[in-house]
Each structure stands twice: as structure tokens, then as C-alpha cells.
Image (cartoon, rainbow, N blue to C red; front, side, top):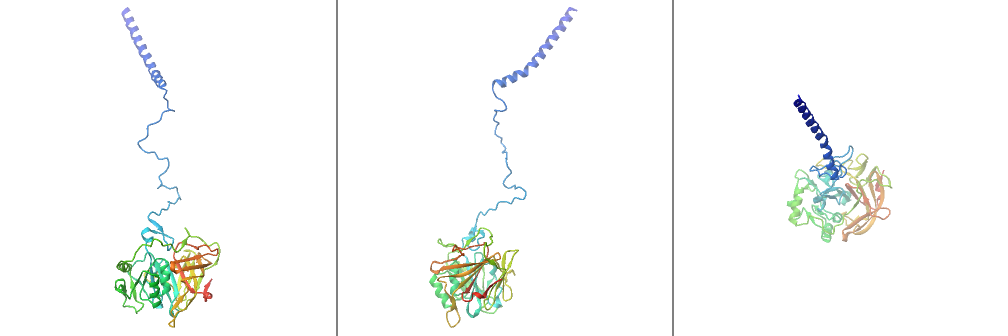
Length: 376
């Protein structure tokens, strides 16, 4: 009986010892942490191997937020002020002498031009000079003979002048100003031009972008702008309305033969061109010609001989004119020094004119007939 009691007492003592050990374990561990003086507020966590974004990636925009516009590999065109690939913007433009006779009144490829000049030639008809840095296609024309003042305009842009024939005055001017040109009546003619025999000569001479490039390579002309080339225009960075001026919803430029006029389209903010009583179109595309800017440049002009060939005072000269854009017209002045290949327009304060990005039409008009330019 005594043995049994002792056995029970031994079991109780063992159990109490085990319970005591269990209770003392946790405080010992905590005591060790406190001795090392480390706690959660002072621990620097290990760097995460997976990056943690504190903001959304650049490609993710808030609703309604537009992606930032970039122009890598582009530059502002010296002809339009619009963004173009660098390989386009640094090349010399072509200045193509288009016929504007009634039978070819909708020229092929003229819609690719960035700048279009119009001026009188003999007989009251006009001829067009289309300047562009990206002509394309296999049918560009019809192309006619050069006039010396058109050669001078082309030289302002460091352009390569494309024409089919020339007057003796143009021949002298080309030699004087040393303008690179491709003439259909020279040995290069068959390389660059072709005749459309379904049409009546002389209004049936055509070329193509590929043929022009072959001619340039054969002539050995430089295709990049010369190092000292200065852009012809100063452009706004974005579309800008004129702060001053008068309303111009329509402008009529009364050349005797084709009587062109332009009507402002407020939706596109462009001036659509008409001549010979109907819309003036590119015959390749069927699209009507439209321009962001219109410049009327008044010049002293007269007959140079009994044949009615025209000449004008533009070698070292100045004059007045109009600038028209976005439904308004302002008065401007111009100055030119042909020897230095320099030509600029100026606003009413005498500062260089700033124009809107886009295509430009320039009417060269006799300064003794200003009343024949009508603004409505």
C-alpha cells in the first residue's frame, strides 16, 4: 500500500516538472530577442527580387489622357512646317513647271505639291510651278517650257527645276543663277520624259518620280540640301488664327484666262481652289486642290518683247501683298535678293511673317492691277 502511494507521488512530481518547463520556454526566446536589441521598427528588410512599381507604367494612361506624341526620326518640313521623315525633309525638292492650259486644267500629280506658284505667261494664260519634296507616281504633267521668273522662284528653295523646253530668257537665267535643272529638249529628255500620244502636243509631255530620279543621277546633281541653305518660311508650331485682319471667305484672282478663285471651308480650315469655272483637281486622284495659306505677291510686271513674253522686277526688289489663312487676310510686304537666293515676307510691324503649317499657294500678280484681286 505504501509502495502504491509512493508511485502515485512520483508520477505527480514528473507531471508538474513537465508543465513547469513548458511555461518557461517562450519567455526565454523573447528574452534572447531583447538582448540583441532588434525589433520590427528598426529592421531593414531584404531587397525584393521582384521590382515593385510605385506608379503605373508609361504605356498605361488615365482615361481621357492622350499618349505623348513623339517625332523620333522626323523633322519639320521646310516647305510646310509639318512633321516629315528626316530622309524626306533633308532632300532637295523638285520644282515642276506645269501647263495650265484649258485642255490640261486638272494636272496629273499636282496634288503632291507642297507649294504652288501661279504667274502670267504670254497671251494672258498662266503657268504653275509646283514645288514638293515627295512627288510620287508614274504620271506627272503635263509639263511645259520654263520662264525665267519661275527659275528664280525655284532657286529660292534650293530646288531641282523640271521643265520641257525654255525661252531664251529662261536659258540666260538658268546659266546666270546656276540652277540645277532637267530639260526635256536636251539629251536627258528621253530618260526623264515621255509623250502621251493620245493627247495633242505640246501639252502631252509627262514624267514620273522614278524617271526624275534617274535623270538626277545621270546629271550628277546633289539630292541633299546645300549646307548654307536657309528655310524660306517661318512657321507656327501649330495652327494659329490671325489676331488682326479682315474676313476672307473667298478670294478671286482675276488672271484673264482661267480666273481662279478660292473658297474657305471652315470645317477643314482650308481654301479650296477653282478655275475655269469649276473645281481644280488632281487628275490622278480626283481630289480638289486645297491650301492652308494663300499669299498674293504684287510685282512690277511688263511685256519683255513683241511676243508678249512677260518679265518682272524680282532680282533685287521689294513690294506689297496679302497673307490669307483661317478665314482672314492681312497686308504684308516682301523683299528679294536673287543673287543671294534670298526671299522673305514681312508683317505690318516689319517682322518676318509667320505662317501656318500646311500647303501654300502664291499668286504672282501685276502691281498695277491690284483691283483685280477681290476679297469677299
